[in-house]
Amino acid sequence: ASDEEVLAAILREAQEINDRIRMSLLTSLPYTKSRSVQWGVVEDSDTFDRVILWGAKNNYITLHEHDHPSGVSPNERKAMVKDSKNRYYIGMVLEPKGIKLIS
Image 1 (cartoon, rainbow, N blue to C red):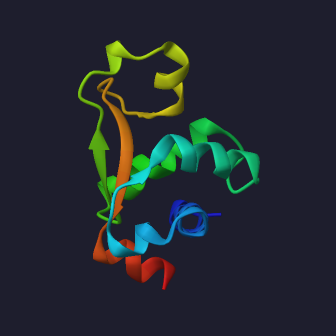
Image 2: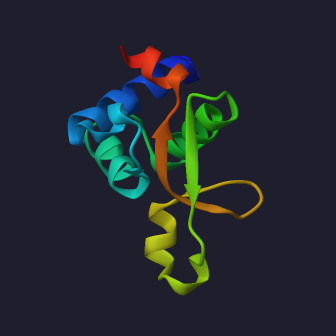
Image 3: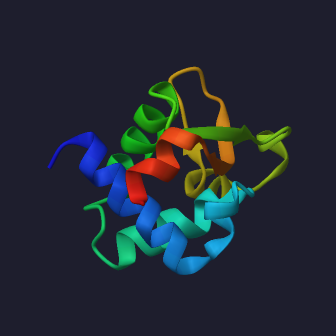
């Protein structure tokens, strides 16, 4: 499946969890990641992270960065999405392009 198809599946899963995502409200990345892996939407957390970062780069979503990741446990950091610059993200908001993707 393409990154766009996997992203659409992740966003649909996020919508199942909480319809707030369609209202462009902040949606938890750790919870969405956990559910997406648990329910087989993605094969593992690395795939989830890669696709979420791809979605942000391509303007489907905007990511919300954690302001103090060193203040949380390693397990809590692992649940977040981490980019190549060691920034940790805890939430996402759909952009119009992302809303169209799952409509």
